[in-house]
Length: 310
Length: 266
Image 1 (cartoon, one colour):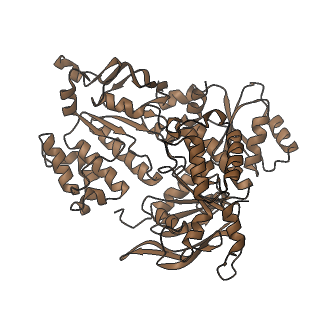
Image 2 (cartoon, chains in turn brown, blue):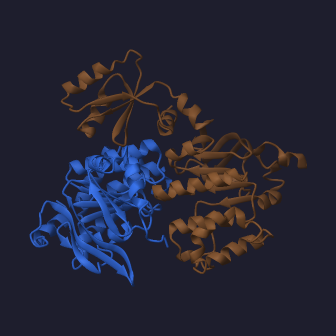
Image 3 (cartoon, each protein chain N blue to C red):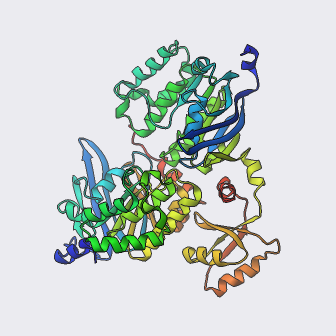
């Protein structure tokens, strides 16, 4: 592998990767590139293949077919080189529970032939939050603190590419927001980040995303482009009886899809002749009160549902 | 009729000092201390029969501890409570018989078949074989699961498993079901189908007590409480909470309240 590749604009390249577990096809022809300095999100539900993809790219398992490279190094041939230069935070907490916060961090620094002091700048903002508990065993930390420690340990050797497998799963909305704030700062320091999440609302915090379902990418693009490519018009509808409204909207022949979305229902409409007043009139006939109908811009979640139903 | 309900007839609900009997959950100054740490700090609320009650809070706010007390798994160190008509301090076994419970982490036995899981849980709750059989047939039909009946649960897709786990948790017709982050990690369509099952359960009179980190799901609840540092800081319908906090959606309400937390997340 030529050294020049390391400085190329592509941090991760993945070419028609496939992986089977017995009869189950975990990944089918996955093809994408991550540009240097990007936050790239792999968005999809449990069982879609996210973790398998991360394990292949971090050289922990082998793909059946296809090839992939990280920093220009081949995941099969050059696995040792890749392991030196990437940081990986697996979905399941995998630090040493019986070592203290400080011992874990020192351990990972030593394994990577560096010291905590050398790269302290990179982790400082995150580490100060857990420093008051540095003598505590990792196993005794709360979920939020474990997550911060794991991120520090994944960063301590100043990786060029950071792999975060579902770092925010099961985390409350406030802590999730904080975590994405930390990722933004890391990006500003030049680190490329590949991050997976089942939370569709986090997609908009990525530069580009891939929507994944059943081992296949449904779409790769910026969140903005994905939203702009939504087919059909989308309307938000509400009334005083939301449960009945869902049933009534689904029964309406103009409705292509109708899903509950928080305090509104989103309906996509087949017909370009759609007239709000007609729908309002029909809903009034069905005894709905306080009906509000407005055209809205789709969210990534709307797009995911549309694409996954094809 | 199910055994738990028969029990209900044999042992009349005690009723905490004649409080409103249409409430399935009553918490009065409920408190749990671990040493000098107060995990749940003097919370009081009631959940009415047939209600969908959303129990929200940041990680470490005390949700799990409170829920464990309501399920009869942990004895309060202060205050009192009643669930399904039984005292959560002194009648924990009766509480357990009259509730259903489902969490994302523990749901079903992967190495048992679909019907075996149903029979096991039905049996644990003391249902009669005949009743288990007829209700299993009905459930398989309703869920459109006929062809999955003899499959190992481990071989089913996650969405199927979650729907089945929920159906099993209410199979013995409990008065109230506790759902602990039931939809984590599920795809958006399955997540919505899951909520339709919840609505259906409430239409049969089952009360639903649910925790979630998806704020759009908070909107589907009749009422929502938000815990901060062991206390309930807000409790109302999503509509009123949004008004009260001048917020566009429940996420904004949550962010406003949870950011006030002073308790060190430790």
